[in-house]
View 1: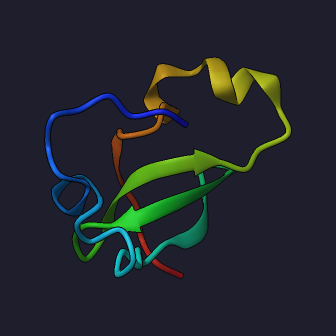
View 2 (view 1 turned 30 degrees about the vertical axis):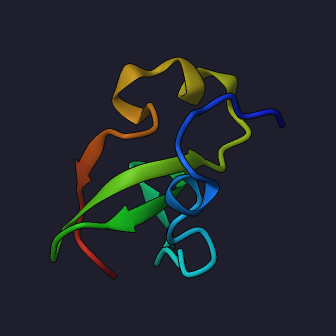
Length: 72
C-alpha cells in the first residue's frame, strides 16, 4: 500500500495499534452477520456471513446499516 500525504505518519496511523472493535456474530431474520453493537438492541452491520447470494443483494443488509434486534 502506498500513501501519498503531506501529513506526518504519526498522525495518519494514530490509534492503529490500539483499535480493538467489539463485534458480535448474530442471526437476524435468518441471515448470519457480524455486527458492531451500538445500543442495547441495535447494531451496525460490519459483514455478512451468509452463503445465500440474495442476502448480499438486499440493501437492508449492506455494511454500515443499523439494524434492530432482540438478543437471545
